[in-house]
Image 1 (cartoon, helix red, strand yellow):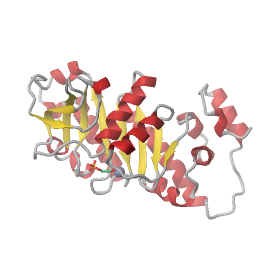
Image 2 (cartoon, helix red, strand yellow):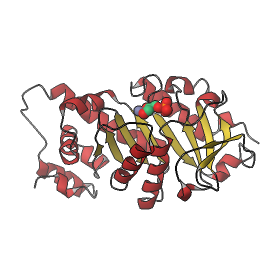
Image 3 (cartoon, protein in one colour):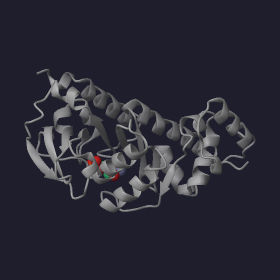
Image 4 (cartoon, protein in one colour):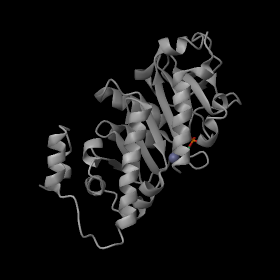
Amino acid sequence: MKDILTAPFIEEMKQTTANMYRLGWDERNGGNISCMLDEEDVSEYLDVNRVIRTIPTGFDARKLIGKIFVVTGTGKYFKNVERDPETNLGIVRIAADGTTAELLWGYKDGGKFTSEFPAHMMSHMARLSVDSENRVVMHCHPTYTLAMNYVHELDEKKLTHTLWEMCTECIVVFPDGVGVLPWMLCGTNSIGEATAEKMKEFRLVVWGMHGIYGAGKSLDETFGLIETVEKAAQIYMLTAHLPRINTIKDSEMKELADFFKVDYRKDFLNL
Ligand code: 13P
Ligand code: ZN
C-alpha cells in the first residue's frame, strides 16, 4: 500500500485549498470542496473495505451509492489543509443505504465533512445527470464576487451579462452563465436542493450575499471557472463608480462565442 500523503489527489487538494486561501476566497473555515475519486486510484493507498466510522448525512444520495469523495472538513481552515491534510480532509464513500457516509480516511480529530455536504452531493448528482465527466464541486467566498452582490441586481441574466462584459474571455469560459440564488440559510438540505436545481443548467451558482459554487471535471477547471468570475467581478468593482466610456458589445460577445464554438446562453445577450 502506498503512502496516501503522496497521492496525487491529496496533493491537488492541498495545492487548491492553499491557492484559494492565498487569494482571499476562504477566510477562517469559509469554503468547501468535494472531489469524486476513482476506486482503483484510492485502492492504491487505502484498504477500501476498512470503514473507520459511519456518519449519517440526513439526505438521500442514492444515485451516488458506492462513490468515493475527498471532502474538506466542517469548521476546518483551508489555510491548514497543506500542513495537516489528515485532520482537515476526509475520504468518504456513500453507503448502500444512500443516507450514510463511510469514512475511509481523515477527519483525524473526530471531525466530519463540510456542513454544506447536502449542497455538494446534490450538486454532484445534478451535474452528473447532464455531464457524466463532472467530478468536482467547490464553494468559496471570493471578495469581489461577494462585493458585487451588494451593488448589482441579483438577476441571472443581468449578472451574467455584466460579468461577460468585464473580460473578453468570460463568455468563452462560462458560456452557460451564472445561476443565482437569493440569500438563503446555508448548511441546509433546502439550499442544497435549490443549488442542485440550478446546477442542472449552470456550472456556476452565486449564493446571494454569501459566495459562489462551481462544478467541473477537475479541480483545476473548477478553480478556473471561479477565478474568471472573480476577475470579472474585480474589474466591475474597480469601475462601477466611474463613467463607462467603453464596453464590449453584445455583437462582439456573439463573435467570440461563434469563433470559439461555445454554446452560450443566447437569451442572456440583447441582440
Ligand atoms: P464548513 O466549515 O462547514 O465547510 O462551512 C463553511 C462555509 O463556507 C459554509 O457555507
Ligand atoms: Zn460558505
